[in-house]
Amino acid sequence: MSVPATLGPLGAVTGPALGGLLLDHLGWRAIFLVKLPVCLAAWIVARRNAPPAGRLRRPDPATLADAGLVGGAVALLLLALSLSPGSPAWLLLAVPAAPLVVRWLRGPGGRPLLAVLREGGTHGLHAAVLGLAAGFAAMHYLVALHLQRDEARSATATGLTVLCFPLAMGLAGPLGGRLADRFGARTVAAAGAGVTALGLSLLVPLGADWSLPAVGWRLALAGAGMGLYGGPVQALVMTGAPPGATATAGSAVQLVRSLGFTLGPALGTAAWGLGGGGTGGIRAGLALAAGAGCLAAVLIARPGRPAADHPAS
Image 1 (cartoon, helix red, strand yellow):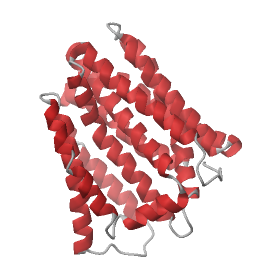
Image 2 (spheres, rainbow, N blue to C red; image 1 turned 90 degrees about the vertical axis):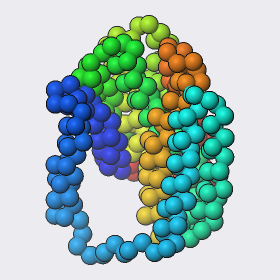
Image 3 (cartoon, helix red, strand yellow; image 1 turned 180 degrees about the vertical axis):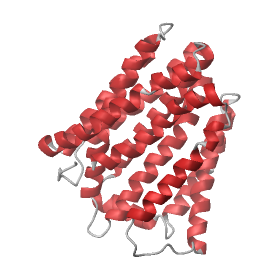
Image 4 (tube, rainbow, N blue to C red; image 1 turned 60 degrees about the horizontal axis):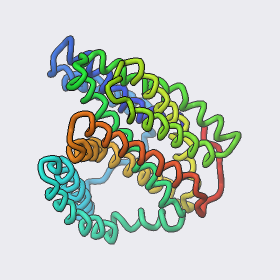
């Protein structure tokens, strides 16, 4: 489980680093054009390796309605968080998101997800994945913003610095799986989340000392923790799924992880703005990210109903 759980986020966090190089040397249009050959290569690989059986159905009205409810709720949250630095009253825009989510959970699309969470007892694990993904995304956004805007670093220097995170994550990912096979998935996942929280916390007191090496080793520490945590927490979710519901369980954890990656920059923006901007705002945003990591470690360490610590590599 650690291999695929590492590769997905690894691609997501490596992209901005490579984007810095493209931005400085080929211009901003290149960051959009580079997607075309990557998508084509992914399509070719999928066509050659995916099982031939099975076809996707056209979405029915109920599925489209579910997509509208979830998409509407996320859009309201993003708008509320993005506009709140100008005026905190915009946070009230997030209130209508709650009934949209409740309506989705009570519909045909949300009921299977609720059943998996209820029967598997993995509410805490999913909340940990959501929180850690949001904290990481907020940190990643704020660090890049601060280095370029406030520290006057080039996009290339910024990209190479934040590359410390995915490099450490890629090295620690397979190790996390092997450790989980030996010591248990819950223990390793909680430890990895704790290491990530430590790395994020060490960014908060940097103050004026934002030298690239000082930022880089802290990002590497946080990335190593993410690598240790990814596969084991995925294994915990999958082994906690009721029989016949592993696909739903896998989709659920990917859903909350994607939501975390989506909401993280908006949460970082809100914390930065409400913290007064500048150094104070950066500290507020990074403290929020570190707090999310600490909460995730606690949620993972707390035993749930599914007690089996199955192989995670």
